[in-house]
Structures are given as structure tokens and as C-alpha cells.
Length: 401
Ligand code: GDD
Ligand code: MN
Image (tube, rainbow, N blue to C red):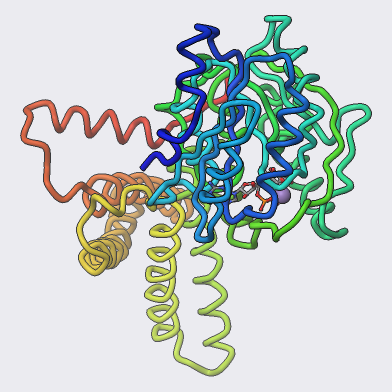
């Protein structure tokens, strides 16, 4: 639903003057009603002389869209609001929707709470206009930038640590980027491949930078205090971020491996704890194995295959498939290992290692292809082929060049 289309005077103006919009300013908003008018006022003043528009992409549950429409009516530049009925992809999804709806290829993203000073927009624009980069970001950590607006010392530490880890994980792509977590940037939307992006929560810029090598420049800025209202950052966003990092860096298959590794450790811990309590070791081993299988399933649902769940069979069917597979696999693996040791004269350690690696790959393939298979298989003959391609893409995407 696009609100404000009729009331916005900018369509008529754009046609009358035939001036193309030079800059589209995209503002994702979630319950920011008390900040809208001040934001529009300061943005308008900052971009005076530039043909700019403001596009709010709103997922609010309060009256923010109405406030935006009221402000739009008297604003000195075109302002519109796209209110999304389904907040797909959260903040990141809203930004992508803004790119799609923008009048101009030059798209600037800025928060709606005035933590990103609109007065920095002309600085970003000037740098962008030189034409030698695809993206200019406003950095809290580049020379002269500050992060004073971060709520408390914990958030400062979390921000600094996650920035450092992220840069370490993408040493090539983020070589010239001191603040990959900033939500304040200006890019040429033609330089990003929207089909490749999977917006997960807050860190859309990281997604953009990690997926493709872009020419990037930075300008420093002062991260200010919130004008009004509350931050929407949360522990849940933090978890999203970790899974985003892992998925971006390693692809699904490695996230799957990480969870498998955690499961193995948990399995050992359970067996150890139960035998300490005097439980028979066979019973302890069975409980440890089953608890791990269930725990791994839940983690995979949440973090590895979350984007495939909607098209797949119901949760219980997925669980039944996964649970049977893992139990069957555990049962089969031991005799196969014994066979390798007896007939091929491999050492038990080597045989175990081989069976575990093979089991890992088979388990990943089984889960991608069977457990999370789309409900209605495509009727086209090339479906199987495309499925394998998709699996390949999921398993390997993306690499850093
Ligand atoms: N449309 C939409 N949908 N907007 C959202 C959503 C959502 O689900 N969640 C948050 N927003 C909007 C907020 O209304 C605000 O305009 C902006 O996104 C940033 O959200 P805040 O709640 O202010 O989060 P923050 O201050 O912790 O995060 C900011 O700082 C980070 C750096 O520490 C943002 O700029 C992040 O992008 C930035 O990475
Ligand atoms: Mn904020």
C-alpha cells in the first residue's frame, strides 16, 4: 500500500519542471512519529538547492504514517511514505524497498531518529558526485567521526567488538571501511544486485558490501543522541547479526557445520554429566545423542534454513524427517566404520573421521533437499537441475574474492 501518493504535490511538480530527482533520501521508520517533522525540516534545509525527495519506508504500529502525510503536505520537497503491511526483512527489507521505489539511482539511507545528522548529507553528496565510487558511507570511526550517541558503554563495546570481528572476517571487502555497521550511506542503486541480497534485520550495509566488490569512500560523522522515542535495537537483532555474519562469510553449509560442532560438544557434556550422576553409560549415550539431535534441529530451523521454512512441509513433518534421518545415520555409521576397520585395515580414528565427514555432507544434502524441500515440486523438467544449482548456491555463497 502506498500512502500519500495523491496528497503529495511532488508528482505534479516533477512533471512541470521535468527536473529529474537527483537524490532519493530513504528513511526507514518504525514508530518514529515524534521525530518526523524535525527530520524533514533539517533534511530539507540541508539539501536546499538539490533536487531531492524523501521516501519513508514505514513499518510502524503507531500513527507515524499519518504524521508523515501531514508533514508532507507543507514540506518544501517531495515527501512520500510507503507503509508496509508486512514488515518483511525488518529494517534491511525496508531499505531495499526504498531503493526499488526511489525516483533517482542515487539513494541515500538515513535513520528516522536524527542520530544521523542531516547536515552530513551534503558532505556525502559532494563525495559521491565526484563519480569515482559506487558508495559513500558516513563513518563513526573514520578520522573525525564520533559515536557519542550510542546508548551506554555496553553498546559502545558491542559496536566496537562487532565492527572489529566483521572487518577481520572480510579483510578484503572491508579493507577501506571503518564502519560497516553504519546505517547512513549513499549509493548508486545500479551497483547493487538486489537479487543477491537477503536482508536480515539491521545490517543491510554489511550485506551490500559483503556480496559484491564496490568502490567505497567514507566521510566522518558524529553519531548523535536520539531526538525522541526508543531504539529498536535488541538482543534479538544481535542474534540476527551473528547469523547474518556466519551466513555471509561461510554460506549455509558452514553454519550447519558450526551447529553440528556445537551439538557434538553438547553431546559429550551431557554424557559426561549423566555418567557423573551414576547413569549407565549406554543410557547416557542414547540420551546425549537424542538431545543433541533435537537441539540441532531447533538451531537449524532458526538459523540455517529459516528462509526455506515457509515453502517446506510443516514443522512436525520436518522434525520427523530430520529425527529419523539422524537416528538412521547414527545406527548405520557404526557398522560402516567397523567394516572399514576390519576390511580395509584403517585405524579407528581415520575410519571415524571419514565417516563423520561423509555423514556431515550427506546430512547437509538431505536437509537441504529433503527436509526443507518445497512443498509443491515444480512441474518443469529442469526442476531437479535447478534444485541442485540452488543447493550449490546455498552451500557456497558467497565467497570473498
Ligand atoms: N521500516 C522499518 N522497519 N524501520 C525500522 C525497523 C523496521 O523493522 N526497525 C528499526 N527501524 C528504523 C528506526 O525507526 C530508525 O529510523 C532506524 O531504523 C534505526 O533504528 P534504531 O532503533 O534507531 O536503531 P539504532 O539506533 O540502534 O541503530 C542505528 O545505529 C546503528 C549503528 O550502531 C541504525 O542506524 C543502524 O542502521 C546502525 O547500524
Ligand atoms: Mn537510532
